[in-house]
Length: 233
Ligand code: URA
Image 1 (tube, rainbow, N blue to C red):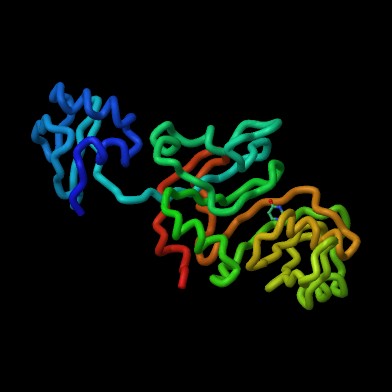
Image 2 (cartoon, rainbow, N blue to C red):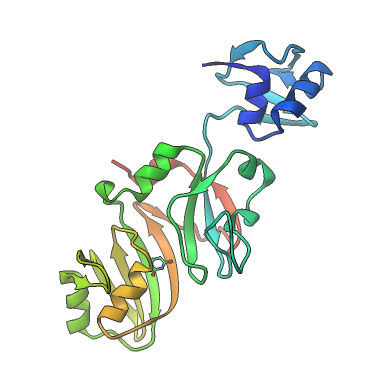
């Protein structure tokens, strides 16, 4: 694909269109090691290396990252009480208009994906893709077999006609379970446990599709995501 030089800079989240024009005209940007001074000229973005502010970047059409979300951050661009999860990312991410693929509650921790690729965001969230999400839930009370079976058969959530079904429920210790769902309804896991007379004290998402939150990714940190690891169909 061929793109204008100033467009290339802005698409990578490096600066505004105006700043790009000025920097290119001043010869401050290298494209594959060469100074090109006409912002409107088009070049191929294939394997393109851009050097800007003494740092080199490989052009990417889209970015995909995963965050280990800590508690106390809102999945919103207009957070009300707490900071936005986007505050944990870089200015480059924010300039690229990165969005989270679905949301986690402010007190939920764990795996949260981001991208500037609208189709990808849609695929992660779309119920049609049946991408499973595994949560570790610490419960107020131990979960008995009967209630685990009710979750597997499907429970009715308040103000929601459609049953919410758990694909898997596994006990870890007395009050801790792993629950797998393939939807993302509002407060879904918490409401499912409420439907069987229990409540969630702590919630952590540890897996989306085939992708397990890497143990080496500390809470509050992000890393690049290889989308193939999700096992999306
Ligand atoms: N279900 C919830 O109840 N909360 C989350 O943050 C995610 C799933």
